Image 1 (cartoon, rainbow, N blue to C red):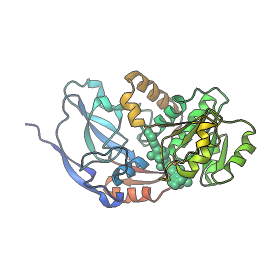
Image 2 (image 1 turned 45 degrees about the horizontal axis):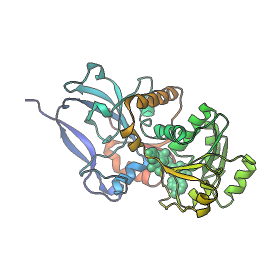
Image 3 (image 1 turned 45 degrees about the vertical axis):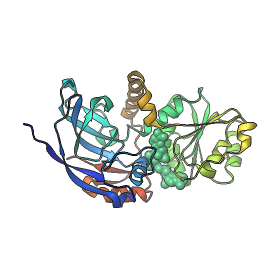
Image 4 (image 1 turned 60 degrees about the vertical axis):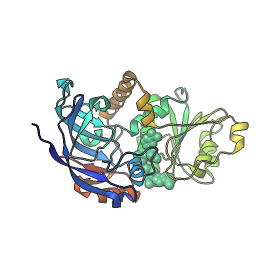
Length: 330
Ligand SMILES: NC(=O)c1ccc[n+]([C@@H]2O[C@H](COP(=O)([O-])OP(=O)(O)OC[C@H]3O[C@@H](n4cnc5c(N)ncnc54)[C@H](OP(=O)(O)O)[C@@H]3O)[C@@H](O)[C@H]2O)c1
């Protein structure tokens, strides 16, 4: 009879303050079931959604104890029955339970990523670039030269929006909360960067003249979202995909009545569950091609081994400027 493999995994047995509820447990993995593969994990970032999940404030909860990590990269070590042998040795992206040394995943949920992309770059490709990709392609038809406006522009999603838009010939006006972020975003290809505040509309007018964007991307919420929607053209669309301020949207009646602004939402998890294999593959192929050219590399401020996962989430919760990366393998 085959015995299980003992591996270490970060787990939370209750929700609460992320650094307090996380611990490193030893768990026994059975051999991969039919349709599954065993993956040795290499690296995973800590994203805002991971912290929300640990706090019990995410859009859906998971049975406890749970291994966190909405994305990460690893390599296939073994295959279960019915899995084609060409999966063996593949570098893959996982979409759940990433913060562990090894795990078994259904192949249907994995994305193969080319070896030309190093693990520390691949670790960031499963969530944020696809979100940016969908935000730019699924809501408003854009022509070359059209402007898009976004807040949270210094985030990984915001940076990916800038990089993809630049490749497509769309212009981005980027709203940030820290003036220091401007130079970095211009280097990525941002056409304009403004610091959020009461004079945003005035400064926007000075940059764009009479031009008004058709698409706004909001991940802050509260008054910042109201200011962003105020910049849109009549009939424009604001898509909310995050709420970093944790403040509710406040929409003036006139935005709907007189200006016909549409307010939409986006959640990648829902999109991936509904998307066909072909459209998912087309998106990831596009993202990997750009990643091979050096795109989608958010600044990494600190790196921690799995054994220091509590320290790592504490650093991420404190709002470290840039990403925290977990090293999970050898
Ligand atoms: N809907 C979806 O499917 C989906 C998918 C992916 C991500 N998201 C969401 O997208 C957002 C960005 O995620 P990410 O991984 O790209 O983030 P990230 O790279 O970790 O960056 C976080 C950003 O948030 C900014 N920030 C933090 N608190 C803020 C506040 N109160 N007001 C304004 N800015 C604030 C930081 O600004 P500084 O640089 O000034 O510190 C930083 O730029 C998150 O809300 C995440 O949950 C949603």
